Length: 326
Image (cartoon, rainbow, N blue to C red; front, top):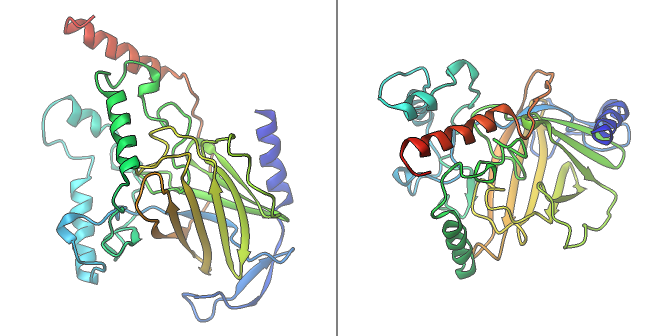
């Protein structure tokens, strides 16, 4: 913990002063905007950003063949999405309906619908590519491992975010709230603070090699470089936990390449490509904007082994006893 705090303090203390830039961004949203640079010449990505959106990763079947929405279609879909996800509703019956809406609308920060029908831009159908035979075997093996187990037989059956291990990961896909990230830059390093669970992602820029293949990590091993005004981040060495990603992935063979390009004062164009030959027949790419927001980011105080976890497991045992299972 002391080492973690020291890293965060060092990153904040050494964050360079922003200087006037030396030319326009690659594809600026505003013709009057100028790309700023840090004191050591890096394009300045610093700030607090949100990637919140309700646009899904994959294109819904009802929108097959349609890549872009009109302004009217976007507004209509925004209204439909807000109504269907409104947790202030009290229609329906049963515990799942009640517990599933335990957070009222005040707490959610889902973002808006984009004018695209999916975050995936390649393949053109907005869908994840077909699985390889090996990928299908991996999915089947994971399903078999879960078969016969209850959702709370052990703490290991619970999601990583519920166990306070990890939430957004790499690449960070938007969820219902806390889709906020603070980017800090020092000479040779870019640091990204995730609001949810307060992870800090350290990205070296000095050209060092990736860790040995035997060393696997929750957020992988990232290495960055600049291509013009774009920060390119290459990440490998993920572990093979089945719920590590919000899409099917092998983990060990997963390779993620991200592109961060600041296009004006308030937006970063964020794109990522997933190459996972052990899971998919081809690489695939998604794109979503990151929008600047007011700070600060406060501590997200979550700890593994909390009272909530004890309550979940104890509740599951009580439910089994009531049904005569144990």
